[in-house]
Image (cartoon, rainbow, N blue to C red):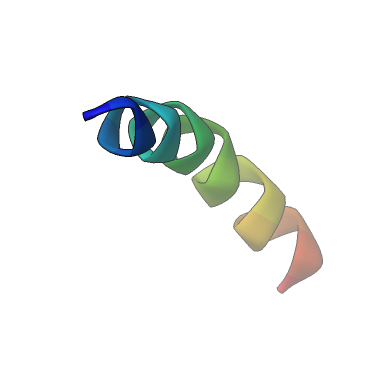
Length: 22
């Protein structure tokens, strides 16, 4: 599941970007 691995990596950096955006 390459997609899952990629999603996890993005999710790790998403929270920080989301908090900054919000």
